[in-house]
Length: 107
Image (tube, rainbow, N blue to C red; front, side):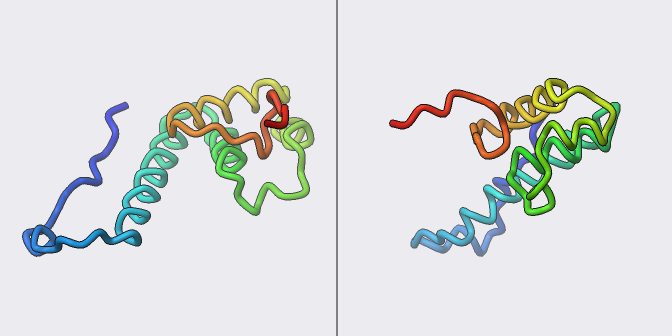
């Protein structure tokens, strides 16, 4: 996948010398939204892709439903759903353990 660019700048933007944290956050989240849309639209099973991206991002729609329960609702194995969640996390270069199984050692 070629990642859509979020680095476009308008001519007026070049005049700003000070750092704008809101703008940087907006660029990062625009990147996440673009990658999420691409992940879902390219998937064979769009429902599984939508739920896996939701779990990876820790969205509120996932609260109260485990990966195992969601996987059975989707008629797939929990491992298959976890694999999709991990694939999306890798695309974003994030590693959340909110919903995924992993090494939960305290540091």
